[in-house]
Amino acid sequence: MCRHLGWLGKPVSVASLVLEPPNGLLVQSYSPRRQKHGLMNADGWGVGFFDGPIPRRWRSAAPLWGDASFASVAPMLRSGSIVAAVRSASVGMPIEATASAPFTDGHWLLSHNGLVDRAVLPLSAKAESTCDSALLAALIFDRGLDALGDTVVEVAAADPNARLNILAANSSRLLATTWGDTLSALRCDDGVVLASEPYDDNPDWQEIPDRHLISVIGRDIELIPLKGS
Image (cartoon, rainbow, N blue to C red; front, side):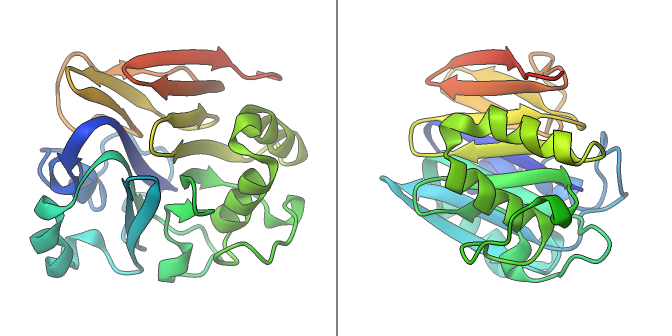
């Protein structure tokens, strides 16, 4: 299980989303407030952001709280589209930087918060790791993000115990699903945040219901019930 966050809006610093909030991903790496599975997220982290249309990433297999280099640089990294995650590896999954979200196909950044049986996922030479999340990301990229909802429903049918909270972004859009875990949204004056759990106590955070597809364009948030829910 993991915690993840996405931003779409005016350019902001990575630090303002990940490190500075009182209950941001840094704190969620060792003390999440709403995590249903697992107690910590110490098995790696990753941040991805768009430089124009090009996705850039910084990933590690170490705990986020121990990376002083990232903490010193994060205030200088700015983008209008950001995806970040901290990881709690499922039993049997490798702990390596390439297993940490976000994954990319060169156009999208994608994070998976959950668990899925690798036996229901096709093997792919494009997968960045052998972990379940990397294989799932490769399948989603292969099917296309326009089919994200259908892909999640199909994988859930093949593995009824799967938890499939997906968060994906390109330079102009955020997409997410809720399937088995929490997600909240915050509409700000300058953009929209989607996060596994609120990073502060702002009363404007809204909890997204389970088994929904979420689409964010500009400051507009659309919720679509997923088939089979």
